[in-house]
Image (cartoon, rainbow, N blue to C red):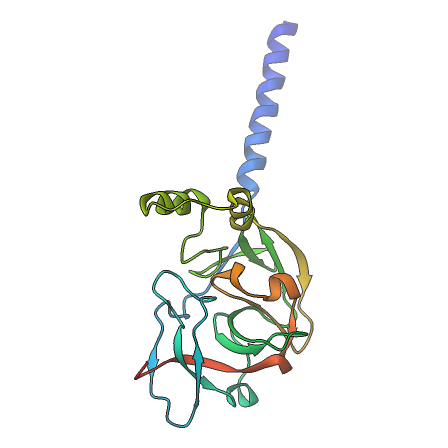
Length: 210
């Protein structure tokens, strides 16, 4: 009898654990408006910036060449998630390009290379730690081997793809920006949220004659 009671009790515990696991559901936040392809636009009336760095590469030399920047855009418009911006790096003054991923008042956190906004996982093509469009180490490793290349600093790459950042509340008049090819520049992963005063304009796309 005791044996049967023990089995019954263990079954109840197992069922309770399974129900608890089912109840742990991570909510998502989806960006369905940001275009993955880089627009080609007429630069008349806007500024042209020569940008030859690979901070925004996702496998096809994205945002490399002559960029069209609207330097007055944020005078009348609010920042939106997914927008690509031209900015001045605090302290160094270096000009660079990155993407807005976090907005004022939001709580942002990075877990295992994935971006969370207000405890919701962000679903978007840019919402993971990437290198040239690849967002996991094993795929990157296969690609490098297929091309006959050796991975230098293997542990560093593993850490990058699974990087973490403690939660931060983005202050008023600041934004959290990340480069798509995040390891290439100083962005908010290293600097934290930056003042909107450092944002010099919205990148509209590539110039027609780039």
